[in-house]
Length: 449
Image 1 (cartoon, one colour):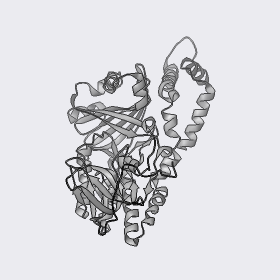
Image 2 (cartoon, rainbow, N blue to C red; image 1 turned 180 degrees about the vertical axis):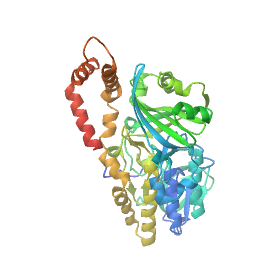
Image 3 (tube, one colour; image 1 turned 45 degrees about the vertical axis):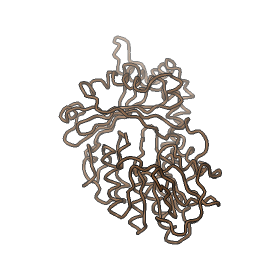
Image 4 (cartoon, rainbow, N blue to C red; image 1 turned 90 degrees about the vertical axis):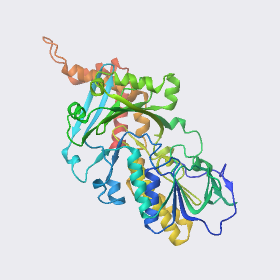
């Protein structure tokens, strides 16, 4: 993570406002922005929550799982009111190679009871619900509005934003940038320098309609129980992975693809996705489903070492704008980190507004470091590099499938080979050196241990 920010660029220089219109402006009404606005408004601050869509969630194409522990703190009893599609009671990790696959399948009925573990939800509904809580607390929602520039004093302190509305300048004592991946505001403040393409992936998703009863039968669940499937080896050599989530009467199936790898491969993402849906392990699950939506969006997946500086003079950065998406193979999480970072940004801003000392904004990083938000990212800082490596992406799925196939193929009258012999043969067939395997296993243990 960078420790220093460069000079502000592309911001608009203005005089110090005598009476700012708001105590705080939050840009972006996604999970991070709404959590920040909720905390600020609850503390009695005047807050403007800007959203470029006609309503919160209108532009979101998310197709994953929301984990609820941070919501316990934000909105106690959230599970009695949040718009939920299905509660995840079954979690699968699948390795695909050619027409083969190997799946680790775990299920727990504990996850289907309060306080629950995670749920699938439509972001158009979830974001609107969370922003509604911020509004009830007193935040002013300003939809269909784009923040185009930061407003800064000659000394570089952020004092508001310029929007695309007529008379569109809004002033505040603090601005919180929750404007998503590749944050324009963080870049204007010099907090997010450099080309982030190497650490950015493209998420593509199809929403497929199926009757709820059919989903129950195919996935072995009932009622509002749901399944989360994460995949490796399904991206035709492009760094990334796949996913399949059950909603109540739809499926979300998609891919996350490294931008540079996708460009180098010369393939269109929908072609790679179509190939995934034809795989023998996936085709029976999606057979007969009707396509109701196709969408794509960028995801920051570089982890801890690619995050921007999080605190500027009068500015905080949270959520995807701060690259707070955990892509660590067995853990693929984003919304909970967005809500956590937004909540702590709101608390730090409230503290600074109460004390009258904007230097207190530095408490934001301290709050993040003492919580799961940065603790998990720091602990798993090497995981994205390992998970997106050529070995894990292209060679290890074949190695694992070869090994498992060899273990369960009966070749009487020949005796069964030992696991060590099978492992060496599988490694050789897939171009994996045993020292590479040992080194990666050690890295994995250090990262995930």
